[in-house]
Length: 418
Image 1 (cartoon, one colour):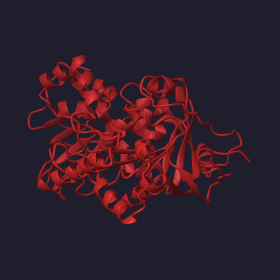
Image 2 (spheres, one colour; image 1 turned 180 degrees about the vertical axis):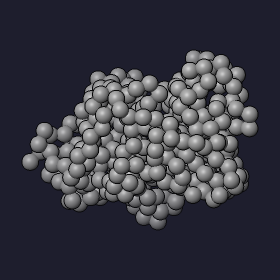
Image 3 (cartoon, helix red, strand yellow; image 1 turned 120 degrees about the horizontal axis):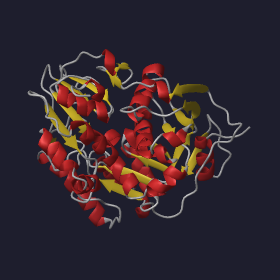
Image 4 (cartoon, one colour; image 1 turned 135 degrees about the vertical axis):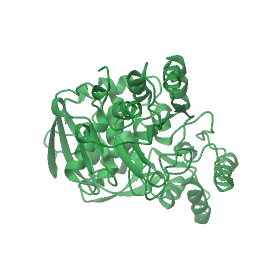
């Protein structure tokens, strides 16, 4: 019997014949922590007292509360900074040279096909978009990986997702993953991998990253795409070291098969308070107070280009706040160089440097009671972006930008003049 991509990667990294359901001890290529999860990991590492440390495999990225919003967050950032300095860690990314952790892991070449990457953040599954097996862990597990370079894994079963056709205009990866989660539920892929097949060449890598990012919202352990020419081109100038792409065997065993026709996929929006509460945008009748374009899901330059195209020559609706947050310093610079910054400013948007702040309800974009936001982020749980009486609607970048202009949730095709 052949193997899935997840089984193959975990076999290679564990040196065993790994099959779904088995427990393996595997070498990790990289372990990532951020300013929230890192300090806990540092303290747990100190308790181990081993003295051993796999420095080159550790990546430290402050991103959740940057710049620091208060004394508590400043102390967290300081603890990370001092830990990196004390141990002379080469992969620490200070504010101003950094960005949202999952964006940076790709930009800086840590993520690559065939690698096994863990991170103390649930959306570490993002890197499956470029053929890695990546998954979220706890801070205690991160400490163990610091010291040993290894972790145990239960090899997941895999759901095969077959896509056919090509996205229509203003439809993308975010709409696909919202549709999948709506179909199978937030527990439909519990401890399973989603593995994508079919007309993958019609899905841009940025969209693949968005899809893999939200595999966790269906309970998934990972969301993995095959490696193709688009993948190789996307990472060509940034990847660190050599990598080995991994494909599934033709006779691999899957626990379930899902099929989607991209030509028929509509722009989707997930209503409060679950990502699985999705429906076509055309059915929406929701006025908004805030639109948010950014995050580890849709804060890449491709998303910014989509948003800028929609708002160019238009103005943000009265009474609406449009927050635009690039996912990294590199994306920020590209926005300046391509003139996107000017387009957003002319439209009346607020533009921030890279941060996770508003996405997790931390700061800078918090919703008051009764307010509604349409957001390109990945979660819309109760109180996710502010008061428990606020509401978050999840959508793709085109819908978010169009909604900022209309003052209600719409697609670009529904805007006046289109």
